[in-house]
Length: 329
Image 1 (spheres, rainbow, N blue to C red):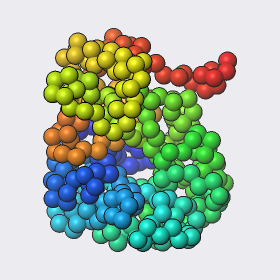
Image 2 (tube, rainbow, N blue to C red):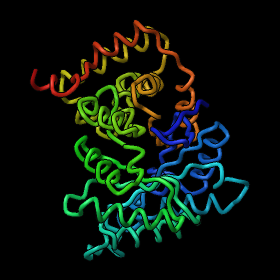
Image 3 (cartoon, helix red, strand yellow):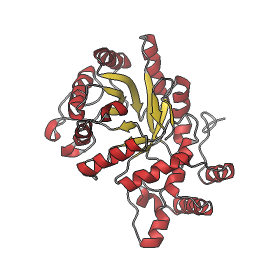
């Protein structure tokens, strides 16, 4: 496994991030534990989760699964850079009670204590804002975060799904208060979805945030979906079926799979390896449902994509270009 600094921090993290969203809803606890053991054995030290994972009546379940894994000991917690998120409503039994969601100081305090309990740990390494809160000022958010850092409950703060201007607002406010500000941004970014290159990634680079792409296979679209369909009739899942109804998208994906085949590679690994070549990217989030899927993802770290192949990929999936030239001049 390769490691890199997380943005401008001194924190060393693996170039793949273990996403845990499937733990609970699709992967049972025992299998989830085995996947985490396999990830650690492969050198992956960056684990990502969120308080709402588990979803619906089971929200919080994913953090609980991580907690029971940490409780097994063996240095598991000390070896892991643990990231979780706050924003979604955590009211019990489907209630949407006021102040049980978003980024008010009240909810941040309540949510971090609940996450720590479920995770069976005394601190969270990277506490991430899962979405922008348009009604809570960053002065209030950073005041709450500063208290948690002073209490030793969290070490760093990160963002997820922030536009470029919110990254700037957050870190300019933190700087005025003498704080470190955001150190990471999780954003939707992959070969088929490159709009993050317009402003999000440049903002992250300007402010020293590590970029953590989520959905690196774009909901399965970049995982060899057409070949699987042709070989064994396996229907696409995730966002792929709707996307493939568009003839232009289907032709684009077919060109991608043909180019990958020409180089004797596997589509999913190529999609991950491409992200690892992108400026500003710390490492993509991989969310395996099985140990085999994790092993395939790990192989991508050692994959060296030839320059001519990178050019071909860029021709098949052209990015929007930087802002403002992408939409102006």
